[in-house]
Image (cartoon, rainbow, N blue to C red; front, top):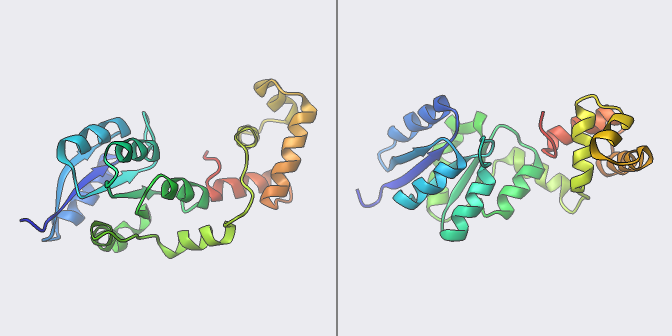
Length: 207
């Protein structure tokens, strides 16, 4: 059918892809033309099929979804991508939107939101759920963590002491303490544990 929305589904979990396929197959105006289980495979499948919409998972083993989307859009600037994620954090959403995502969906919302999101993005619109939009609005213009601060906090999240972090990152213990002070201030956190909790929620780090 000439008006059928052609879709590429990218996720490293077969069950998720099967669920997406079931939803798409139930729609008369949509067709799942290809699937991919990794970022690198997604790039190849896009080149082969030139789908109207890509459903792109974020976390994949060889190349994350945002990097894959960036590569696809560098070659095909009109590519329309909906990012799928488990986490509503604003940091990841900002990365995706800056990379050109036209939609951003939490996997828990797929059965309720997926069909309408595909139609909206295929028509040239954008689709960002209220929960994610609220997180973006809450932190717009706020300070972000530096790559080094993210490294420090990622190690702290594993239970490492300042001394252990200093050894692992080849920094002085005083430098690590200075990074932690900066992290606490930027995240408005009360202590290290609170900082880790906030960082996970917002998407700075993952466990």
